[in-house]
Length: 47
Image 1 (cartoon, rainbow, N blue to C red):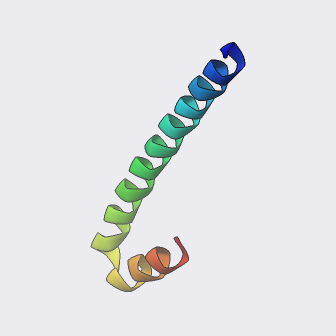
Image 2 (image 1 turned 90 degrees about the horizontal axis):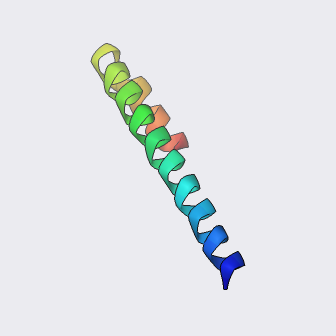
């Protein structure tokens, strides 16, 4: 039971890091959209 709890918190930490990374990604994407929509489209395709 305790091991599953620790696994759950580890997953929560990973999810938090992922959400932060996605937020930073979207911010950089927004900056790129200002400079060029074509580059943003290519980034969205790879992502």
